[in-house]
Length: 309
Length: 254
Image (cartoon, rainbow over all chains, first blue to last red; front, side, top):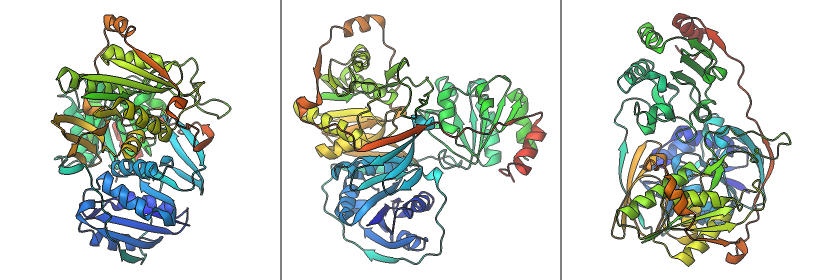
């Protein structure tokens, strides 16, 4: 039996990073066919065929799949499911939208955010926002799962898989895409940025949050915020990092004026390198920081920004 | 329109989950439990729809241990009209899987015939992020996940969804299953008189057998452990030293 990996292809564009990482997990389970379903996705299919570890690319080029609406996507995946023991999605918002639907239609459980493949039926995944790590085995004949991309490396280029065109599956969906509102900011997106500068309550005001923005821009970083900073109105909700906000794992996370409440730590402690700048030397954030600077952020942040000129 | 809101009892978001020494799970005894924060947002949204005249009745349902009554009372105190408790677990350590929850909710939905089900996008304990999608699949209703704005226009919904790249706008037909994201609203604080009033609101108590649903798990949890601890860090004395370490020791700045 083999593996079906559902590539993330939106509006014809391949999300190569998350798909190539999910592929690294998928190849540990068997021979991998990749489903490339979108509209105008010929280039995406060619890119996928060039990834090492792909046996075959199934290309469903149809307007029904352009925006990866869950109903038609799940109907297509279910129509292909018979041949596969494992059905794998990257754990992006799109993958997490579709995978549980596929699982329910196949009457199996979904296994979300797999961070390690221990065997064909055994998987490791975070629970409690990463505060505990669970190993599960499944009794289901078909395994439907999403792969936590931060836990796997990218599959390499250099493959030459065959591409097979497949037909769309009829699906009368009650949901229709209207538009995307992509962030207008030139800054990187929070969950995929390699550097994040986050501000907490210590920043003091919405006005002073510009200090965070200036440093972030100098570093080409995304901007994050603690729940306390969001609740105080210093930063918008979509910048919230933490258990009920976004979970991030960048190469470098700089926490400025953040005390380190449990729910914030849950959202960022998988970062590769953590820097904490805080004037309270007893702040819990220092317990997870690789580099701690006990200093007034109003001195340290402008100094850091200036030093990066 | 009637709205059904499923709610889950979970560890309070401010409490740190502690792994049990026998690796069987997370310690849930003598820990503060609360309504799952995303479900609380779903309850709030349903109440706002009722206040706006879009919804006529709000039924909340919880599936788990008997103490999930407390969670239902919280939702009733916020403004839900009545509650259904499905006693599916004898101990707090038994977590009913999303597939079984979705099957039970599908049965409740058939009985109650709501026009909409709103629930949290995920529970902050098992982080599966699955129940809403599964319920939508079982019912064949519109699937709308990660909603940050909902407007109802007759039998059409206009919804803004939070996706990785930003926001996505969709339209959908009722009936629908909607999962609530963090930005949908800010739940109200419950006032003491409402807590008193909530005690008098009706609550039905059922079991999975009443609905003919098998809730036995598909997954077996073989271990639950602490995540690897981060190596102890160091304190630096100055911005200059910090930047030097980031460039030359950690290699994360060029």
